[in-house]
Image (cartoon, rainbow, N blue to C red):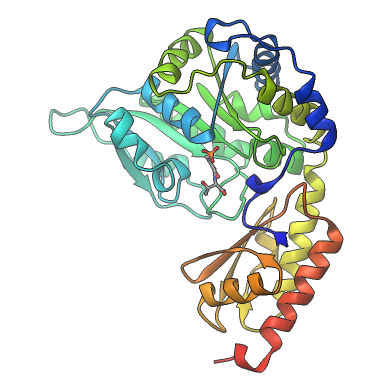
Length: 344
Ligand code: TLP
């Protein structure tokens, strides 16, 4: 099977497993796990923040961040297709009691003018707006990268209004690899940054939340409250640490593979994509020949897994997909779409 459903499907490499097997561990809730401490230090350093906290998932790092930044009844601004809003099981409402105010974006990006337009004067009728969330790269936006100037402008608009800034940087590593802009340059515009080790970097488990020492101290309390305090977590943190050191620079290979896939798809009948919009490892294309779910089913029977969403299909490239397998995917897609029953 060629599994393009997500970059979360990667399995630890044997070198990573060796690092995990050899990890020194302790009770991390008591602050005793040296591997977790090393991972948190390295992550904070890469992001230019004072401290970081390792957690089981990106959903938890995002939701803990919201909880630290807000009080029930507050409002958080984010793009309409933000992961925090769409795919975190109602976390903002359930865990922080906040309202999400959605900004319509362009491939997941919005502007300082959008932020200013969404702000309302302080008035007893309105929920107080506290936080702006940005997602970089943007998942549903097709792995789109935020230009650094746009981030800076959005930050300026947020600061004018006294708002805080949170970055869902689940795939910030991809943005940095694609642009050559260091992660800390993006991170400098945010009070809190969430990054994932279990996506393109290929570690089996975990994410980290970074910010000031005081922010992370409070985040640790909510991590515990949300059930995310882990004990000998060094075993998995070692995988994340290995991924940080060895798998960031290779992300450009995933981006080249995604481009190859998109260009191949652009030349096929019954599907459509603007290959020029593919900037990182996420490829979304429209399916016109048949329902998208039907195409995904047919591809799966032929050995290729992708995710159908509405009229679109999503395919992600990652550590466990080679260039040859992209060529094979294109051959299978061409055959599936070219067959007589594919056309309606
Ligand atoms: N995204 C997953 C699914 O939940 C959709 C995927 O396959 O892409 N932020 C962003 C931008 C994400 O894409 C994801 C995961 C998360 C946060 C949450 O991370 P986890 O899965 O570790 O909770």
